[in-house]
Amino acid sequence: MKTTGRIVVGCLLGALAMPARSSEDFIDRLDESLSVSALGGAFRGRLSGSLDLEGYFFSQPPPGLMVASGPELFAPRLSMFLDVQLGEKIYAFVQARVDRGFDPTDGGMEGRFDEYALRLTPWQDGRFNFQVGKFATVVGSWVHRHGSWDNPFVTAPLPYENLTGMWDVAAVRNGSTLLRWAHVQPKHFPGDAFADSRFRLPIIWGPSYATGAAISGEVGKFTYAGEIKNGALASRPEYWGSDEVRWDHPTYSARVGFRPDERWTMGFSASAGSYLLPSAAPTIAPGTSLDDYREVVLAQDVGFAWHHWQLWAEAFETRFEIPTVGDVRTTAYYVEAKYKFTPQFSGAVRWNEQVFGTVSDSVGGRLPWGYDRWRIDVAPSFRFTPHVQVKLQYSVQPDDLGAHDYQHTLAVQFTVRF
Amino acid sequence: MKKIRLLIVFIGAVLAPGLGRAESVVEGRVPLPKARTAPVMNKRYEIVSKGGVVAMNPPLAVVYLEGDFPAAAVQPVTQMSQKDLAFVPLLLPIRVGTKVEFPNLDDTYHDVFSYSAPKRFDLGRYLPGEKPVPSQVFEVPGLVTLRCDIHEHMRGLILVLATPHFVITDTEGHFRLGGLPVGRYVLKAWVDSKTTLERTVELKENSVLQADFP
Ligand SMILES: [Cu+2]
Image (tube, rainbow over all chains, first blue to last red):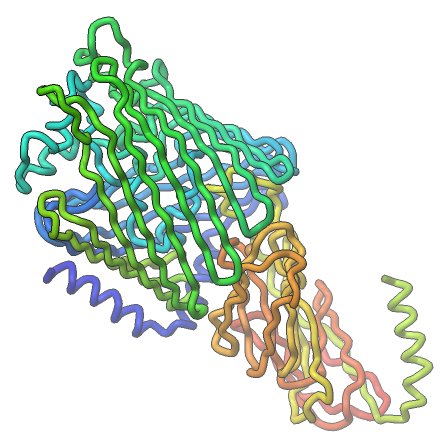
């Protein structure tokens, strides 16, 4: 609590002491100096970024995709964006980050290029776009607000970070193995509950910045998008880079959206691809291929926004195919609402839930292959200036072990964007 | 446009002598800063991207006569719209007490807000064509920076002035401010948030004063 708490409190006091107007002016001028233009405005580039200082306080084990040995975590992150527009038809962007891991860990600082993409827009009515690179998935609706400035919460919705018992480094042989990996059987202990978390997968790993190509467009009230990527939605950040050759087993995803008017958005997404790493090939059943170990996701999203309200909901039906066991299924969804009380003060609440199907155990019965879980997130946020904001998040979810025990997580995030 | 201007000049020529008021005109030039780099839109997570060139905005100045003037008899009403993901006009000088409407002329949402000290507000998301058109009344003089919570690159300025006598320059910096009262006044030229030029002017009856800003 001490170090993280002190740093966070220091940031808050710093923000309060900052003369809002001068910082606003300063960042606006910085913004201008980080923009370049050439060829009479046909080439324009802009460097921008955000600095996030995050503090987490939780009971062990850490929730979601975080990795930490203690009850607190301080996670600073610098994100830099480069947006380039070349004429009307070519757009490119890069996102580079320096932080303590793609998902907060208590390890050292590292730098990464998380996204880079080139987009072609041959027609100005937006009917067709082609994009190639390493970029966020077209599936679902959360990607549009996953950046720290736009996300009403500090963390991702549960479906984007709740670990299942499925691994990517080895294939499941039988139901008992899966139940052991999911810590459903035999009875596990809190200490080792997350000892193997580095092998485990959620159904969709955050914004899933895998490498590949996408097409997208808008036709009347409909939008479409499709992509071919080198990793399944569940695949982990370390394998999103193009150097991990998985083009023999690509993942296909698509979304069709409908927008009756500006208030409503609705979408259906689907994705299918192998969730196993190439290195897992020696562990698969004889006579099968990596493509027989697919993750198949069907997702629906709906959004509503009007005046100071914004509401989102997404549901994911996921099945992991295991030739020796059969398909194992899980359903996850969340409903999120944000309301802007004043120009500067907003609040958001989110209900998340994930339930698991069953798998045969070794003694002829069937058991759920994961703990059903719900989580409530509450997050007030305050914008000091158009460039400085602070968010608090409180989350509660039941403990897997005790029926009446709850895990509490408190997160604070201070963001300066420029 | 040219015809309308001619018509205005004609009506003015017919009406002005009839009014018999001692009105003065000041004209001149304001040195304008270099044009800024046009903003680049952030389209990273928009699966559908339309267009790519954001209109260049040549810098303009607002020239106004400072002084103690009676309040307007009727509340002035004007508009600042959102069109093609930009504010139109980009710079709007208004008199204190003016009601500004913000019609959305795009087929997409905007969320116009300001954190500037003279006026803090957030209009929220409203449909194109939604009635009543969201509006704000500006009671405190000063500069209000408008932004959009959805489109990071959008910027608009409203300059709230305590005087009814103001005019926006052309792109060369030329201005002509007519219908002015006679007397000794301070003429100011707002150039940007950091720069306001000023000079004193002696306005005489039915005369045109040349007043360039250095
Ligand atoms: Cu906008």
